[in-house]
Length: 439
Image (cartoon, rainbow, N blue to C red; front, side):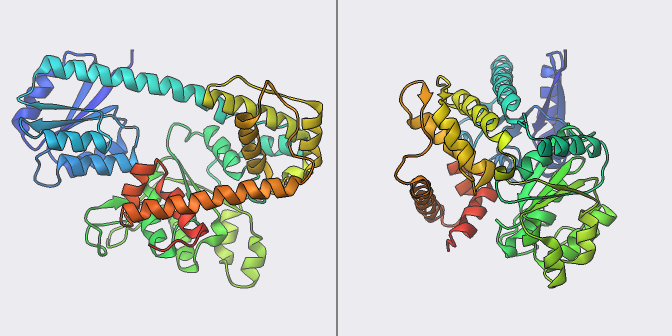
């Protein structure tokens, strides 16, 4: 049986020693650290299953520690230790993502119960995630073009060569990138994805390379960049054609030297990251007009994978539609529906300008809005394209208004907006850019 590892963080070394003694005979491993900042490094370098952290510490408070950890590891279970009478802090901890809290002096029987309860919840979440992963990791292909792409991906996956994936928006470039990672020797490490066109240029460098405390106004603590977060694993750079020229120079050096220098730091850090990039633009044309560096292009284009649009691989449409029916039936806990012959004809006769993403959104909508057990038609006779356009316009209007209200409520605090909405920071930045939202 694999033992779960607990990290206990408290600036009081006597308490750490006592907790280690009290918990050492249980069915889990115990690691202690008296510096919360050093504890953050431990979390990024070791497999930690649960954290117990004290509220009152000199470097940063337990609440601040929880916020930092939850931003990077949202699924990490955390228990806050508070002094008697600090219930307000405990309530705040629960609101920002802590699983539970305990008060000092510690009742160790209660603590063991809380720990076991936390692991039961974690196990249940893992079971649900595994079920979802079975669905989300499956790649549906029938066409020869896509079978050839999958074979290429399998061949290059074990090696660390950079891969450039091209194709129209919505064709499934990230799906292929994840497939390569899953079949590589890095599969047990992180797969980090970033959309280079979704994050404002003035923030993108900090997101990629990280920063040290004091590097700029608002940099109140050291923060790892996404490149470092992907250490040991894979970094997927989506929409690489949107990367500003000044960052292209820095990225080229990172790929070649396998080292980064966070903002505000004079020291470089060694990394071990595999890079996969994707774009819906013609990078060769961008190189010719000076909008993309030629040396970076050739450094990324070691292995090239071009994904054809859905309209050029119609054999995949029906299997994909049936897959999405299964996927969203599981997600919403409803009975799967079947496709009538007329519905299948509609699917095959449409060009799908939004590719697989548009097909997925269409099937999700129909699954939720169609009465009975059969989807009989995909589009209304009157206006196929107009109906889809109305649906997209309404969805985009809702998204824009929601993000505007969210940023107004959080006074432009992206991290807080992420916690409230459940969206990732990258998704919020993407919406800000898409709808030109000022805040």
